[in-house]
Image 1 (cartoon, protein in one colour):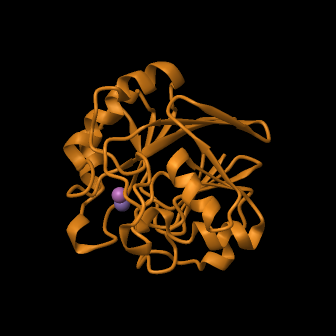
Image 2: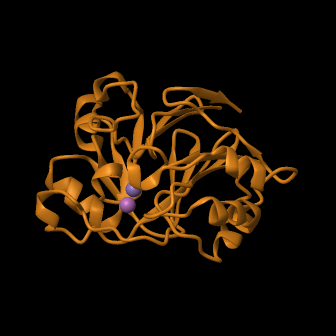
Length: 224
Ligand code: NI
Ligand code: MN
């Protein structure tokens, strides 16, 4: 399984099937690629904030692929002419041999497009079960039910926000990794903007002997 990070929360999980998550590409100061460079088989969006919904609509239309999101956000996406699959917490969606499960996230979720006209439902994370099990936490504060996510799905790889201010910081992400029981942690949602400056090496220190922290450079692919 290959995981490519484009900066912020934008990630491509390639497990034979290309799953693109939170494609905030244009306007993302870290992204070394253009939205038109990305050709996923499916797109997952954790919530409607502009730094997550990002270029999902155009990429979906350009490649004629679906977007998976929480029900209310999916309705909004459908109104924009996208084939959107609306689901909800603990629900799973089978896609080309991979199981995509929607899990809870502790955050806000208004759709920050069209002048905040849309509630956007609730924010979520995703667990993808393929050759490995990966958890993308989306934007979230820490919450105790991460222990449940660990117990139920045993994510070997967790993509966790560490930038603080809008999400977990280092301290919270370290405890989250322990609750999840993930052997590999990939930090996301940091150093995109001044408000979320963070040194990912600090997470490495915090998790020494517990989890391997894989720090990807924007555009870099890790093989797992
Ligand atoms: Ni957000
Ligand atoms: Mn965000």
